[in-house]
Image (cartoon, rainbow, N blue to C red):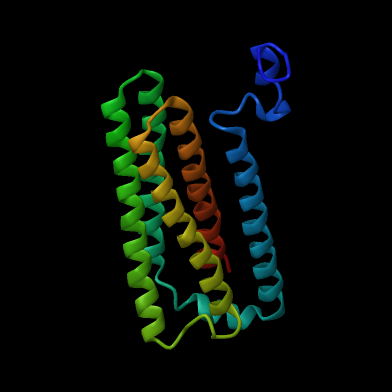
Length: 193
């Protein structure tokens, strides 16, 4: 019985359609809100690009597409390790869970390192958050994403310490959201003309 005198089954359905999702339903609410924020940022980017297609195309040519591609491969690989951690958690292989989550978080650190090198080169070339047009939006979107990578690394580190199945599913759901956002941001900012 829960605190309202209802059986345990009633508590399982209290989240409605979120009940069947892996991990804690509150994480899915957070993920949905974060996807809306990134979506709004990309809509804003599209609007600004529509107003200055030539300027945006010229600015995009200054980006390091190889670094963006490497970072895409790094995050996708980290997502694989996160998925393998969930599989290990379902098999009660705690040591393997910890190793997989550590690998995923480690690749998150690699992503930040590559992004840092990229930012350094862009800033050295005279571009910054204060550069109007493309680079202002680029730094806002990619910087916001980088903050999510940092948050994801912290979440994964906490899950390494407390690797219950629910924690693993919850933490990796957030990490997969970080991956998903980059898989959309990368082609929009780096590739689409």
